[in-house]
Amino acid sequence: MKRKIKRVKKESRQTTGTVGVASLIVTALIMTMLYFSVDASCSAVTKKIGVCEKRLSALNAELVRENARWDEMKTPERLAVQLRRFGLEMSRPREDQLVRMDAAGRPVPGQLAVARMTRGKNRTEVVVRNGRKR
Image 1 (cartoon, rainbow, N blue to C red):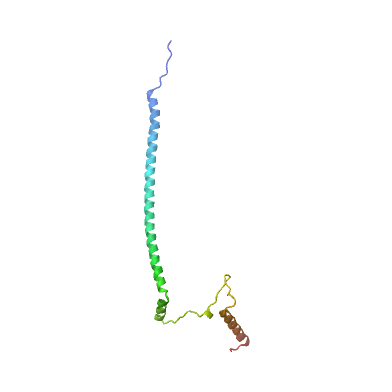
Image 2: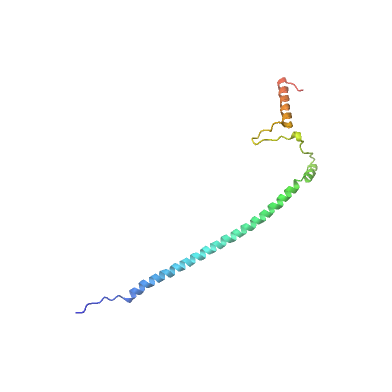
């Protein structure tokens, strides 16, 4: 008696082989679409960065111009002209009017201005105590 030989259908082998190839093609297609979408978003961000850098350089140039204008307005000659224009008379303080401070925020001892200030303070205390002016 002859034995029955199992025959494997050819179509079933083709189906399993084509599913693997088809899934590979679909994966490649999805990866390609993802690549192009990421590339487009990167290009958009790059353009925004370029626009912001141009704006930053323009603002830096404007800052330099405004600082130059401000420095020009602060020169002593220009300041004197503006003060005269508004009817103000100002001069630099004398050396005995300057009070130098230390790092702690207290006046440095041994200054003429500090001595005059304390002497003037004592006078007002005497005037207040006595109730009359000198």
